[in-house]
Image (cartoon, rainbow, N blue to C red; front, top):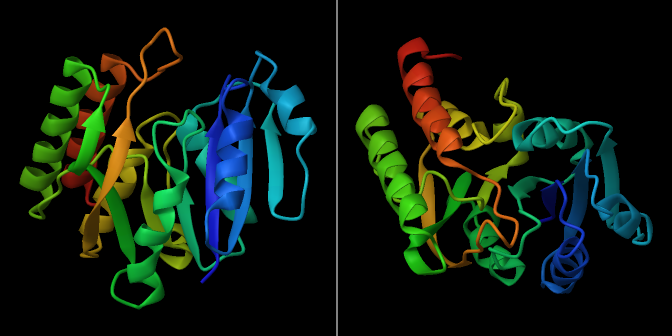
Length: 227
């Protein structure tokens, strides 16, 4: 089964080349769709030097957010399954085949890579607590146990993700897609992954503001119950 890897990128000139090369080396059939979300640090120049039939690069002229980048990429997906890959090397592309396998075998339509079922290093205490609380909130609000709602590694059958009229702009992609999945009564299979966190000085962008927005998004979709 072919897997589309959507890579939202904002100011990741130091890591985006390695991410792409590791994706290319990982043992699965793939297409890589990068959305350069208005980068100003030289990311665009790095991407211009990278080519190949497996890579498509789309550029936003101004920064719009991770959710907007994912929504831009989705119409370009041709593969049967799709996953999100951050460009910051916190997640290991080599682990994607393990997440894809249950979908290939028809055992799942949605697979999340759970950091809390696997191994974690370098995650700040504030982020750890916020991630735990988001997982607890998703479990409580939607009646399905989730250990890592905020994980980047969310792998979907493409048809399932395309069936969702996503509205997200920033990091609320994660709670929105989780809420819509659970409201559709689709089981989320969680598998363990490895996580190596980075600091704000190293380029970490998500903040406590985004955590509060995520809680609000989970609550909003639970109350609104969108189709």
